[in-house]
Length: 287
Image (cartoon, rainbow, N blue to C red):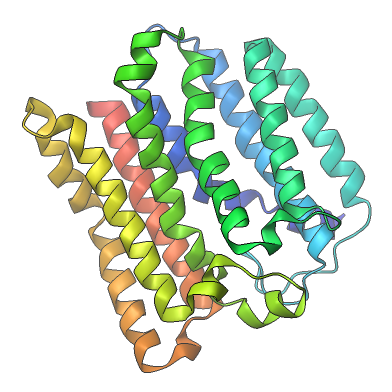
């Protein structure tokens, strides 16, 4: 049981929370069903994401450090049953919100399993693996949250959703390669070529920096030269700790590539997620 709980990695859901909060910024919370908001939050962060983590651990059988776990226990085979049960509960609960929500959750689960499943394993292909995470953890989840909690309209899709869905994916694209940077040798030994391995350690920082800048650009475009333009500067202010640590870590890796390790990776992930979560919470509460 201890192994199963460890590999569910519930704290890891915190790192994926920014996209959910960012989507809530665009939801009319006065009109939305409060129960549906909390239910969707629970489905994603306490069922779908942990189940995906556990299933990935079962397929990988990692002996080295993985996301937020420095010394993982062997992945118990019972994880398969637990993961399947959590996925089924997630889909069934989603019907309380709507049948499209249940369909979105089901599609996300299938994509997640194809990403990890040993006999197919999309994660072993650097570009395909990156694009699966880039799309499903970013734009797809953003769309899932809004369409589950708002009445879908063509104008909403055309005027608001596409560019912010891109922002969501860019934020995922910025942090995802960095989360792989300390596992190059282990992944390669397991037949997995990650986008980070393909880029190299220094290239990973440049790639992630480009996606972060793209995220800022797309976030800024709809509000530039409008009364909401101050949000651009506020966004940068909230991200300052993340930017400082990113540059500090990059400098350390330039001097010694061994600094691209588990400790720095987890710190970067936590700082980045915290900065994003605080900013989007501020937008929800005060904007």
